[in-house]
Image 1 (cartoon, helix red, strand yellow):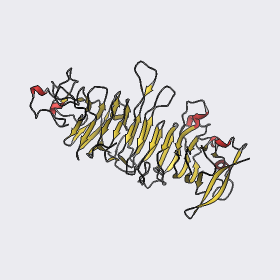
Image 2: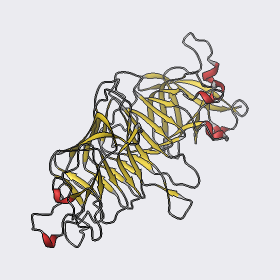
Image 3: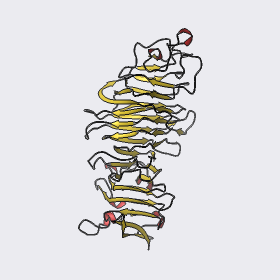
Length: 457
């Protein structure tokens, strides 16, 4: 939902980690009745808009800050800051205009009434400097709390290379409505060994006076690029809360190392663009990990670049039921997808006796396929006998699972018992009792592949 073609650049640089941050409140400006026509506007660089304390009712700025927000400062939006020094708020013109190049530490949208709904700018740069709060290694650089209106950034984000430390920077939505990024790019810069990690976190919050939870979505229309890690995370799902979803959209290919954890993630890039890809030359970074029972849903064909590894990681360790073994679900949703390999790699030493289930759900649709070049696993911390790919909603004759390399045999031609038992089709009953899995050779675009399908016993 891009409403303007105005973009500006938001840079996040590593710099020194500082403790605490001075708050700068963006206000409605001074009372128009006491100023001139030039006194008030929505410009970021207008000192009349800034105070170091929340103004009192009627929220005009009566105590001006002694400067614009500093490079380590925290920007907050005061009540009625969507106004322009007047008594009325124009709901169609509630915004902040970045009129120059500035630096800041953090940006927060919270539950004050009459605040702006957009951050606009035209070819301008807002530089974010990392601020360490309460000695934490994770920093919320943009946070939206308990707010019932959508907020849109028409910006570009860039995270500079980290030469020291490994603090994770987070863009958090813990409100009732959407946090939207409609700029051109969100870039992570630096060497391939960079420890830069950017989280998009859709976190639930408790509703006042109830036991239920709710959270708004994060919509990412910008292109994600770089050699660092992008994590899509949410809360541990339960029956008493509604977890916010993250939507990845837009027209340009995203490149990074990707992780989905707990989250409900929807991939909806335009045809010809990949939601999940990488520019790294290292296969160790060409990875898309599903862990903690993440749910990833395709909204079109071919959202994952075929160079990427689909990795099923650590499942939810504190669940006693069988579903605790599910590291993640890739819902094809009626579409087709192709990856470099399927790989199991569980990192939790405390679950060394358990296996991992990776779910590929064919969903409801016509003929569709899932294709990989190989299937393998890392045995440390993994009970191989309890580890498999579970193909749900598979329809014989309509749905297809192809692999370039044989799963049933080793490179020497010997039977590979472990991998042979790693394919399950639950709609056909109990594996080894009601059905077996058979391997056939097929030709796809002139190349030979192996197809694996259930056969009733």
